[in-house]
Length: 117
Image 1 (cartoon, rainbow, N blue to C red):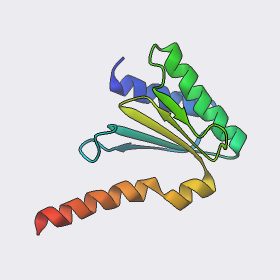
Image 2: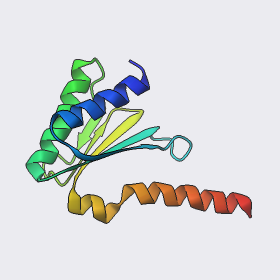
Image 3: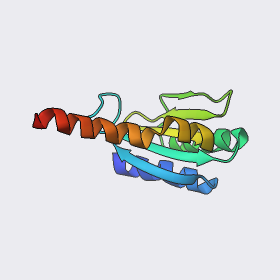
Image 4: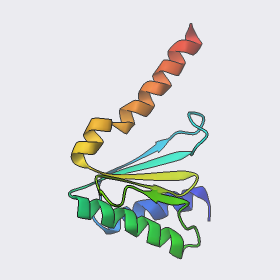
């Protein structure tokens, strides 16, 4: 399975359980931990847990079981580590607070500013 196929599998698994506001970020070159972040919003802790579980089950069924799943107990923010792709499933208030999209874009801007000086 290619990384693009795994990314699409994660997106499809999220869409299957009505994930909201799915965003995919390319973080290659910004971190050595992963190449892609997939971020989605759930309406409740139960919804967040269900979405993360669906991603994990679908990945396992495709022969790519998660390396780990974190945050399942609380259900505010669940992380599913698929290696080259990390899926973050969050409740709206948690997603708004941590704002991962801006965090990664600010990092890119700061690197550009540093390199231009």
